[in-house]
Image (cartoon, rainbow over all chains, first blue to last red; front, side, top):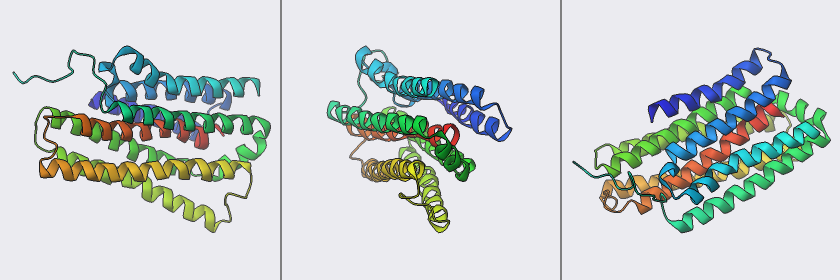
Length: 79
Length: 191
C-alpha cells in the first residue's frame, strides 16, 4: 500500500516539475495523459480494492479514467 | 490465522447502490470533462492564458492532500477488517489531510476573486470555477462521510464484523480522489 502511495505521489509531481522546468508542451501533454491513466488504475485497483471485485465491476471502474483521457487526447489531437 | 474476507473471493467493496451512485457521478464528471476539452479546442488561447494565472503548486499541494487522505482511508479499511487498533486515528488523519485541499481551494478562490476572476471572466474561468466547486462540494460530502465513519468506529458500531458501511464510505471517498486525478492536470497543466 505504501509503494502505491509513493508511486501516486511521484506520478503527480512529475508533470508539475516538468512544466516548471520548461518541458516541451507537446511531450508534456502526452506524459500527463499517460500518468493520469497509471494513477487512476493504481487508485482503483489498490485503494478502492477493485482488484478483488468481480471482473465486470473492476473493468467498469478501471475504464472510466482511460476512456475520459482518450477522448480528451482525441479532442486535443484533432483540435 | 485470522481470515481476511475477500482475500480470494471476488467481492465488490461496499454496497451495490453506492456503486451505482459512484458510476452516475463518474458519468457526470466525464461529460463535463469532455465539455471542457471541446471548449478548449475551440479557444486554446483563452484556456492557455487562464491556466497561466493558476498556481500549479497550489494544485499540487491539494493533490498531495487528497492522495494522502485516500491512502489513510485505504489503511483504515484494512485496519478495521483485520481488527487492528488505530482505525479511528487513520480516519481523522484522512480528514485532516483532506482539509489541506478544502482550505487550499478556499484560499485559491479568495485570491482569484480578489484579483477579479470569477465565473463570468471567460470560458476558462467559467469551467474552472464550475468544475472545481462541483468537485469541492463532493470533497466536503466525503469529509462528512469520513467523520461519520470515524464516530461509528469509535462507538463500536463498525467493528469489522460487517464491512459494508465502511467500504461504501471509503469507495465514495476514493471516487472523489479519482475525479481529482483527472481534473488537476486538466486544469493546471494541460489547459
